[in-house]
Length: 367
Image 1 (cartoon, rainbow, N blue to C red):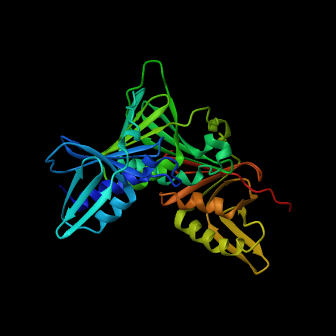
Image 2: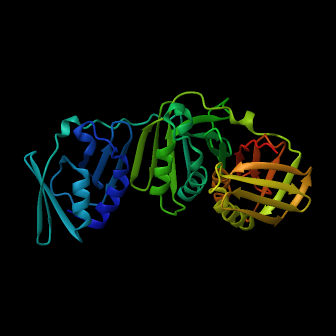
Image 3: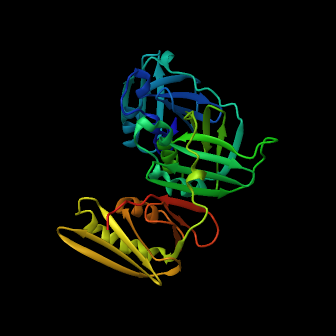
């Protein structure tokens, strides 16, 4: 017996592993097994597996594979105490007050075992830190499977920070989380490529909490553990792009601007930009003023913003969406933009400190 609310919460976690396209019957099942702590729910698509333990009163130990979506929808329509019992490997009976539903069991012998991850490293950060970092960069993963390595999120662990980086060839997004680490002797940085979509899903599964999420990593696999939930997945194997080579170390033009001011200017100018053929925003940077302009058949827009300016005046153009994605994800009240030429990447970073680094490639325009 278990509480419907507890079960719904467990299902909302494990159902992230249900595949969009089912190839084998077990992939649409949820595997229930009794444990000392209650009832463990497991869903796997054959690669990613998610387990969650919910409180339950166990009258008799056992396990069963049930249709996940159907069971989930059923319990979402129940309240309070739910009783579940299986009948001789054929069906499960779900009872709640005057309601009684019989569900046919799937064959559990096909359900794959979840292999434990033998750690090369273990990283623990607060759920809130993980969530904030991932949410601010995940837009920059590649969605194109032909560049599989770029569909990943690079995680680099060193003695006093964890870096998460995503890039798709048009922009780069990196966030640092500061935390102390025991590193293996002689190792400065450990790098892993986590599957990007999964990392995004985990960030959505996490509550706003200072409780830890623990990432256990081997050379080939990862396990993320938070609360009563564990997420297992293979890593993406291969060499990630050396993004440090792309990051400019010097600049000829730099500005400081208020985040809300530039954000709303970009939003307004983008209304016109997206009506044009190339969705372009042009920047004119000069002493104390940034002018953002957009041009289309249906009209044109000009936004002028006060800035702190250092260096040489510059004209440069960006894809409006790529620019918006970066600025939207910045959580400091102001920001710094650094430029070299109108064809080299623009770096967006904090005015003080180095918590985040974004890079946006400009669009070449003929004057």
